[in-house]
Image (cartoon, rainbow, N blue to C red; front, side, top):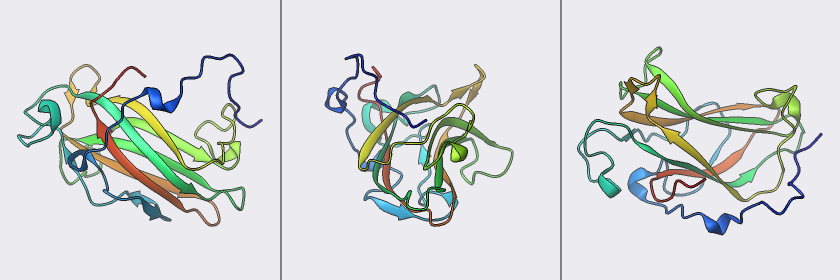
Length: 176
């Protein structure tokens, strides 16, 4: 069964949320097409270092909460077997070596429910693009692990996967 909108008028228009783009907190600065599994772009965001990020973000160690924004410009579901799993990852190692990485937030899209993370429960994704997805996140895990560096990872599946996206972090509005 495909996903559908709630008939109850409780859906909030996307324009209700402020999700400002800032190149300093972006994983890429222009929409980019991806067709393979791997890190999305070469940007590692340092949210715990002393850098000039907005609103004191990056002003030192500590918990950071914000919104991870995905702007999907195009997504290929042509063969009905494509899937896309996007993970916001945190680490205290800027090289993101195995074993020193944690999952902070996750989104997945698939042409069929079989490609979703929980295929027995989740329906096929809507095939309408473009769209913007806003997901709250924190760099704090297990009440004691604070991650300084953030990266975006994409896992693709299917015959001809292709997704064009822009992604950034914002701390402007967290009432999602």
